[in-house]
Length: 233
Image 1 (cartoon, rainbow, N blue to C red):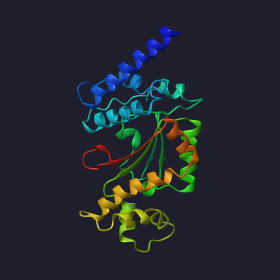
Image 2: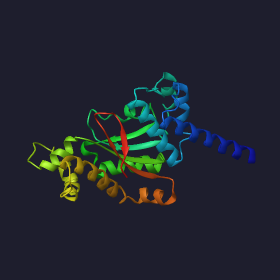
Image 3: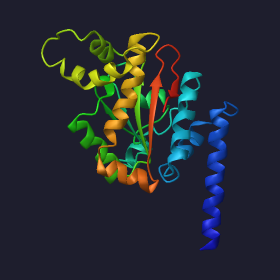
Image 4: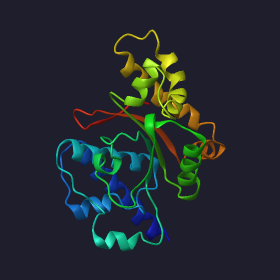
């Protein structure tokens, strides 16, 4: 048993070192190596999972994607069960496809997309499913610059149909960003990410795992111009 524990510790240290080098751009893995780095068996630790996400985004933004977990063999591997290593709440914007911008593949990310990356009851239930039943160690709220939903909330004008429903969920963030220097939409984008993170903490399932140290909440912003994801909270 001690030998098995030592082996796992060495494996974990090896993965952490490799991901660290990836994030610094010092090595560029092959597709096979990338698949190893994103294995659900290894990415159960919140910090390791976050580093894997950010290393993938660096590969994408530097135009060196490895396209892991996209072969036919991967489809068969996850056809009966899923074990994603990250859950991401992102905007429905067509320019923010999370698997692509984090250089991940089939079964790696449980992604929930809705205009303005807002937390509605339905969204909360979907996220709780991933956190409680799939036990993903990372829950990220990913906003992005020049978000149309946030822009609509800042302008707060009448909208047709049910389009205005998501505006209501963003207005508290707009109000909190009032008076800040700089671009009002950008200020509201960042404030909205923080606000939606606070909404997630209303979930007992999420807070329980946060307190247990098995989950990390992360707020991040995607830059449409550079393809980079930045951690803001």
